[in-house]
Length: 378
Figure (cartoon, helix red, strand yellow):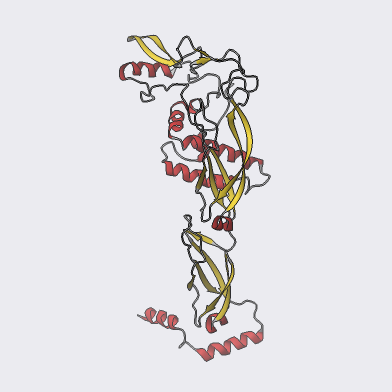
């Protein structure tokens, strides 16, 4: 029975016509919400996180996405199901593709020629996500990333053959991995090319498979990699560690490890580019008389002299207290917006004192209030 998998577009919650940016935006949102670091012990979230990463790995790669759009899961996973690309009713879409290919030089795949199966091929990249704090994003850090990747089998050196033996060049396709097939159709006999059934499209036949990798030439191993997260990185950005992905085939280079950063929300700070934003409450008397405030920053507390008559909603700048630039040049600023906190639960004596203060001040010292009522009268 075929393995049941959800549609990758459904997993990411996007339509089939979604753009690359829409797919990336949906992935970042879902990966952040279901990240294991933010949902400790939640097995369901962990399973969704794996499913989300699998969907994004296919839909973010133009070649894989094209195969998936045409053939579904079978187009990107040769082990999916038991019926190959054929439909459930026995109709082989390949017949139709070969028929059109006879006229136009290719089937529905756009007429692409099959590449040499034994040519060096670059390994697949591995995608991972890591959650870091606001301060770690600002100043950089190191994180241990655990990856499971395919590497060349040490016993057979990636050949798939038992040591001392060599593979045989397929006598049917002569090492090309493809054979010509003649098919009888209502329009006559047409010739097309397809994967060689004898060698499975590999171009060679292994008679004595390696006992360690069973002829695949690859083994899955777990590694812990120390990744340097640069200072100034932002939520959703991705760093690449070259050569730490899956091993290449036939001597090709290894893929990369792509790490997408998730920055945990901070209790006090927000970020806009290289700027740090925060809000600070002040008392009525501090706003009226001025005061020396202690303001939290990502570097620690700093002192700021609040001028007399500061209005609620006033924003002031702390130069050089923002996020370091990702390229290492310069640093942003911190912007602090103050608001006046109204006191609660006043005693009778306090209320009487406040009433006397209000009577003594009157309306003459409230410029915005006078302007407001002047406009209201007009």
